[in-house]
Amino acid sequence: MTRRLAINPIACTGHGLCADLLPELIRLDEWGYPMMPEHPVPDHLAALARRAVRLCPTLALRLEPVAQ
Amino acid sequence: MTMAPDMRATVPRHARPADRPLGLVKRLTIGWRDTDRVTALGTHLQRYGALPPHPPGTLIEAVTSAGLTGRGGAGFPTGVKMRAVAERRGPAIVVANGMESEPASDKDEALLSRAPHLVLDGAAAAAREVGATTVAVCLPRAKQWLLTLVREAVAERVRAGYDLVAIEVYDLPHGYVSSSESALVNWLNGGEAKPLAVPPRPFEKGVGRRPTMISNVETFAHIALIARFGPGWFRQAGLPDAPGSMLITTSGAVAAPGVYEVDAGITIGAALSLSGGAAEHIASVLVGGYFGSWHDTAEVTTMPLASSALRRIGAGPGAGVIVALPAHACGLRETAKVLGWLAGEGAQQCGPCMFGLPAIAEDFAQLATGRPQGQLLDRLHRRLGMVSGRGACAHPDGAVRLARSALAAFAADARAHAAGLPCLPARQGRSPANAMPIPASAGGWR
Image 1 (tube, each protein chain N blue to C red):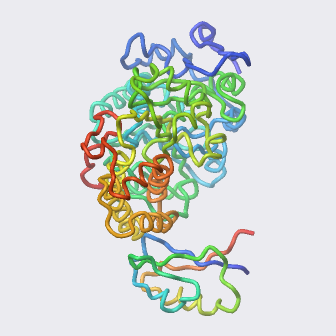
Image 2: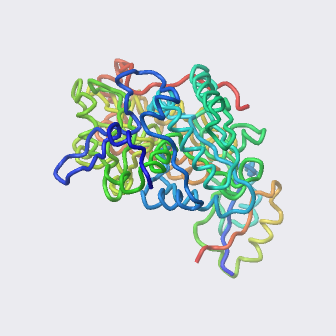
Image 3: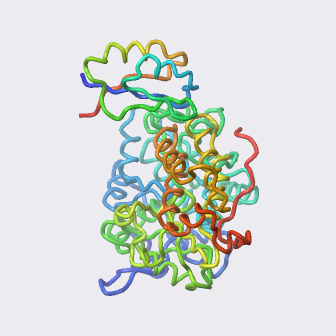
């Protein structure tokens, strides 16, 4: 299933771990908060994306289905 | 649907011939100018008649075919919202939002203080229809006089045994983001009046985990009239794609600023005219309020105040707000003032808003005063592209829309200010007192 990264902006406190783990998809803004890519997670990065979600210290990051 | 016999006399049928321009309407505002005070329940019932009974499902049907959209700013189809709540399992709850945190809007206060029973009728009828036993009316704590007035109206109805649902009136802290749907849910559930991360949406799981219908108080007043007179009557005002009447608030450089009831989709030029016209030369208008957008007056004079039309120029009617900026004021300076206020009005929950809006406000302050540091415009544009859509609520999106529209509408000014050559009003620090009021801080979230 096609999925994309999404964030709960209230839970996110800007640890920035996701950008370290997945620089291919996540960049930080100038204040250290992650910016989510618009496009779905490509297959070859799916495992890394799941790992970033699992390791988010505030459980703010998630993968959600893309509405077809 | 039957109509109380005395209604035909007091409620104009308002069939608008195709050649009559859109203008003032008297539906919600009947009797306001005559008495200018609150309408008692007895007078209200003489004026509009009693709410007729509705077999289940028929009011949603009527509201849907009337084409009523939310009058709080988002413009969501009310019938769709009602159906979504009605179709959920278990008892629902109805919330009437009278917070009116938009500083340039006065219409909710005007409506509640003159015709509270229209709002309460609509909320009670909607509650019955969506399967709710309770209506929660949310009002700003700062307006104790209004709370007293609405509570007295509720007491009148209780004494008359008029309602089949319970109506509770609550006083909430009145921050700018406190009037958003999820902030009301949060507060009514015992938390702070701060927006929540959605989903779940209130219609799925809101107050007390119940399906929750939240609408602006004016929206409920329209429901009260649709329940009485039907969707065909409702559509006799407004445009086919913006039906009914709407309350608007005009302010700034017009001769008679205030709250008016007009055909939905009236042109911005007509709205300015019926507000007494220009008190001095109007160079630009702010459409939709502090979350709205600046436009050159000539660009929008013929534009209907309706989302269907305004969408094409990146604007929206908001809660029916038009601010006319006098030509002697500096739009950049006024915008900087508002952005500084908006930056402090966030709920301090989401990083991009918490840090992004103050940074944008500081850039704008440098621009307004003509004291740029570094590559000001480049930095400002980069930051404006960075915070939209990244908060739990639309607060950062609204502030960015306002800032971007100011840079476009006052483009020549912006170039001069960024080059260290501010315009005369900015140099003199002149700001028209009435153009862009900044409310006092709410003081707390609970």
